[in-house]
Image (cartoon, rainbow, N blue to C red; front, side, top):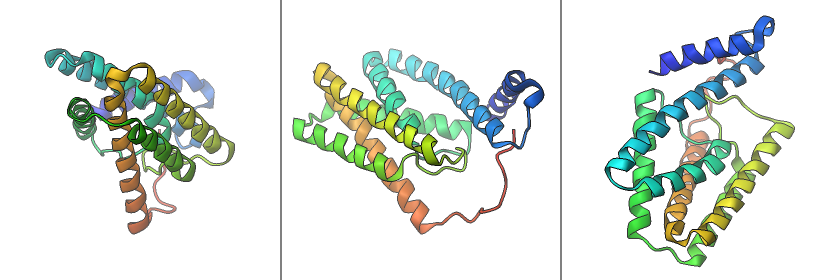
Amino acid sequence: MENLNKILSRYLVKAIEGDEYDSESERTAKIGYSLQKIIDDIEKFFIIILISIVFDTTKEALVCMLVISLTRKFMGGMHMTTWFGCTMMTTMVYSLAIIGGKIFHFSLLMQSASILLCVLMVILYAPLPSEQRPKYIGKKRINIKIRCIAGLMVSAVLSVIMKSYSSTITCILLLEIIEAILVVCKKSILPDIKKGGEKNVW
């Protein structure tokens, strides 16, 4: 499925760039990556919604989607190497957040701590390094950090307004914190050995 999505995104990139299309340029890689992510996300959206309808957790799933769209796409995180692996991991994250939100009832202190810890992780590490994601530097990197922090502030407001789902939101943020810590630890233990290696060709 990921090959089909990449082929589709490549055609879209060619249509967008026209005569300026260059399969090895950084700009083309960024556009192609973004388009492929959009296609992947649309597919996962329908899968998650179908599963949530079966288990009558559609509202919780939509809350998770909202928070993730406000935070993780800017924060970054672990990426599976296959479409199937990524879809399974996404389904597991949603399941853990929804189940955790029903089992645990986090205090306001815990909710605030999760927000503050997320902000700290964003300031220090966002966007997290990934082989699939182009590297961002300078103003672009700062803008991503600002957007992620803004998303976290919106998530904090949602926790106050939507008290019934505040624990679900906190679970999502805690899972993002755990993911960020794992990525940072992996990066420090296993430094990038592909320096000067393959480019993300589109």
